[in-house]
Image: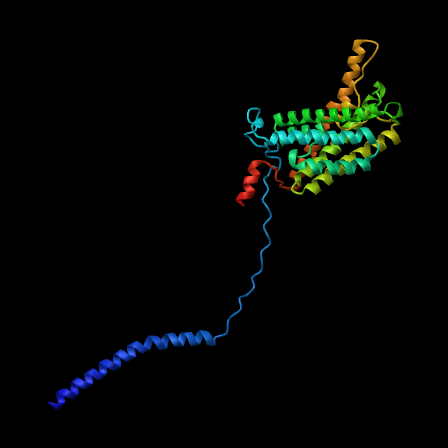
Length: 331
C-alpha cells in the first residue's frame, strides 16, 4: 500500500513540474529576446546617396502639337454669352483700352516712361476681368496661336475699338468745353507719304513683334498679376523706345507710329479728302495696311517667336484653360 501512494505522489509531482516548466519556458525565451534587444545598441541607418532627379524626357520633335488648342473647347458663339464672365471681360477691355488711349491722347507717344507706369497700372487693374489684352495686336496674336477662341477675340477687338472711341470723346469734350482758353488740341498722326510707306510700315511691324513677344512671356507667368503687368508695361515701353529712336534719330520721321490699331483709328489715320475717289481709297488702304494689318501680323509673329523659344528650351507653361486648371486641382 505504501508503494502505490508513493507512485501516485511521484506522478503528481512530475506532472506539476512539467506544467511549470512548460509555462515558464516561453516566458524565459521572450524575456531573453527582449533583453537582447535592449542590450544591443541601435544601428544607425546608412545614408544612401540621393539620386539626381531624372530630366524630363522630351519627344524627338519639340514642335509636336505646336498649334494645339489652348482654350476651352466648349466656348463658341452659342455658349460664350451664356456666362456673365464674358460681359465682365468686355467691360474690362473697354475700360482698359479707354484709359490707355487717354494716356496716348494727352501725353502723346513720345513719353514712354509715363506710358510704362500707365500700362502697368491699367493692366493690373483689369487683368482679373479679361486678361488685359488692351490692344488688337495682342488679341490677334492670342487667336493665331490658339490661346483664345475666334469669337472671344472678335468681341475683344470690338470692345477695344469702343474703348478707344470713348477715350476720344472724353478728351474732345474737355478740350471743346475749354473753347478758346484751351492750350492745345488733340495730337494727330502725320500722313503716310508713299515714298516713306515702307519705313513707317516696318517700324510698326517690328514694334508690334516686340510688344507681342513681351505679352506672350507675361502671359506665360500670369500667375502673378504684378509680374504680368510689369512685363507687359515693359514690353510696351521697349517697343516705343525702339520706334522713337529709329524714326526720330535715323529716319527723320515724326508722329508716324502708334503700335495700337484701336488707338490709331482715333488718331485720325484715315484720310478724309483728296483729288479723286481713287486717291482717297488708295490712301485709306495704305493707312490700314500700315497701322492695322501689318501690326496684327506682327502680333502673330511675336507670339510665335515666344512659343518656338519655349518649345526649344523645354519650357512647360500652363495655358490657363479649364483643362490645365483641372490638372492643377487633381495634383
